[in-house]
Length: 459
Ligand code: URP
Ligand code: ZN
Ligand code: ZN
Image (cartoon, rainbow, N blue to C red; front, side):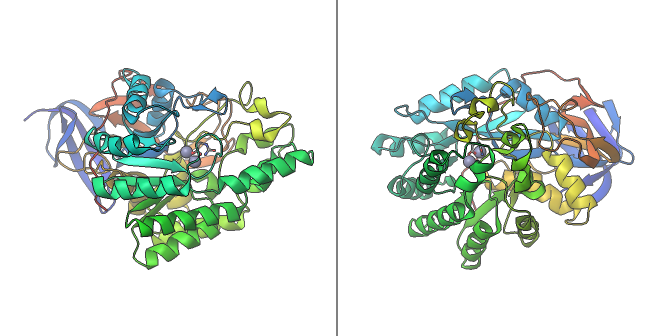
């Protein structure tokens, strides 16, 4: 059978194996792995790694938040993702108070349809819990939305109480869904915020003081206790510090089905950044905040021990000029979030694999295979195998790039990693069998990404 595309001479890397072979692609799927395919189009990947496309299960594209909207929409954000080697994502659809979950899903589908250039799914962030919402969760699972997010922070907007958390956990267990939590104690943060502002502490630096480690540790432990009471699995998003990780580790050692992610910003940045002059600290205003440097070693260790299964981005960009500067005189008005959808794969390869912190297979595991498995996308996404989607990254391990927002494609006027040099970079990116990115140019069709109906959580 003639292939639509053949990728020849590359070194294929999955979460379990590294070997040289050719990949045949037909109708957007991997048709086979074998030396000897012929095809209409051929990519010579000699000297390159061929990775399964990155899977980012924590993004906020076109999200209304804190009086503005995240600056990447599904058009710009998915193109940036592709440049950085990410070929599918799961974004958070946020329920507006009073809306049904079907309305929420319809709203987010509308934002993405015809705009996204890579495949996408949605988690629904439930912010307004009542009997009809609990019932409707079952319909959402049938529609392929198999995870629900709860915010334990952002009092007065997104935060839900313990009763709601418990109800959502119980219902999720019944219907085969996974609950994800933003674990910070919103009441504590609210009080600290008011106290700091009343003392005239209005600079970005105080964001970190208002979001102490103890607020995260408490919320992680509370969420775990509620999940244990509900006999439900739990996934903790964007873990930032050692104390939170300790709670996760303890739960896992007890045998509880607790899963967790961390993000590059917590591995590579520390709280000294909040002291950047001229309001520069605002670039790093995110929740949880970046922490004291000593936490970074603990987080790397958490990856090694498997207590973190996933590296995601929490990509939620806002322009410094025109968005972050809404909080020029009051840090609590700075929209929370930072960009990262394009830099996750290069950073984790360069700082993880090249620096000897993890094997190349572990890198694929945490950036592609595990997120796909935990969020019901595997083996369609997250691996290179016959029948899987042909989402492939041809990666040059020798290519050095100095990261700068000027060369990146994220729709935002900074990157937190400005000036950092990475070794290893995606050079060609194939999405559903189509070459989308070729040596720094977007060459594919735009807006062809499809909504993915995800499978139920299987553990
Ligand atoms: O600061 C952050 N993380 N912004 C995005 C929303 C969230 O909390 O995940
Ligand atoms: Zn969050
Ligand atoms: Zn987030």
